[in-house]
Image (cartoon, rainbow, N blue to C red):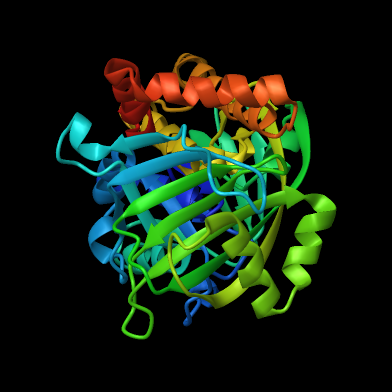
Length: 393
C-alpha cells in the first residue's frame, strides 16, 4: 500500500525532530523516520550532557511546541567570560567580558539538559500529526518528480526528503555528496560538576594550548543547587587519560584550570568522550533531497554553535520548503543552500581559526592574542557585534 506525505525527515534528533514538528504545525504532512527507538533515549537520570541554545533559536523551538514541554528549566546565559592561560596558571588579566545588558534584556541563550530535549521531543511527537516510524530503516529513492521512502512494508511518496541523520549520513553518501574533514587531533571530555560557589549565569570559555576549556551554567537541582557543564578539550591521548581518571583526579584537573572560581567541586552524572573534527558537505542538496544539521556540517565546539547551526538549517527549510507548493524542486533547494551554506562555512572557518590561534604556546602569538582580547574589551561596538552573533541575531 502506497501512502503519501509531503516531506519525509530521516533522523529524529533535535534538528530532524524539531523540523518535523514545525512543518506539521504549519499544516504539512510529515513522515519522520529514525533507526533508533526514541523512548529509551529518555534518560531517567541526570547524565551530564547539555546543549547550548542561542537566543535566536528559541522561536523555532516554540513553534515546534518544544519549549513549553521542556521538563527541566533551561538556564539562561547572562554573561560570558573569555580568558587565556596555561595549565596551572591563573587566567590572563587581559580577559574579555560580555554582558547581555549591553544588547538588551534578553539572555545570550540557554543551557538545556540533553535528556530534557529528548523528553520534550517525544511528548510533542506523540501529540502531533507527524507520522513517526522508529525504530525503522528508511530506503530512499529520489527521482525528478517524486521521492519514495520504503519503511519496512510501507511505501511513502514524498516531494522532499530531508537527511538529518548526523555526520555519517547514509543518504548523503547515497547521493554521492562529498565531504571535507578537518582533523583537530583533539577529543572533548564532557561531564557536569556541582560546585559550592554559584555560577551567576556566567559562561566561561578558557583557552589553553591543548584546547579550549568551557564551563556552562546549568539549572540546579534539589540535591545540587549549583551545577555547570564542562567541555574539556585536550589532545586525543590526554583526553583518554582524563576520561579514565578517578573522580578526585578529574576534579583536580578541573581545579587546575578554574582555580577557586567555583569553590569546592564534585563530579555529577556520567562522562562522555567525543573525538573532534570539522566537516562540510560539498553541497546541501541533490534531487529532492536536502541535508540539514550534522549531515551538512560540523564545527569545533568552542562556542557551542553546532546544534544552533542545525536549528538554523531547520528554520531556513521551514520558511523555504514549508511555504512552497512543491518543496522539493531545485529552485527551493538552491535557495536553501544559498542561504545556509555561506553562513555555516563562515562559522566553521571562524571556529577553526580560533582553535588554531589559541592552541599554541608561541610567545609572540600569545602576546598578540592577549592584546587582541584587551583591545576588543575596549571597543563597545565590536563587542556588541560579537554578542549579537552569539545570540543568533
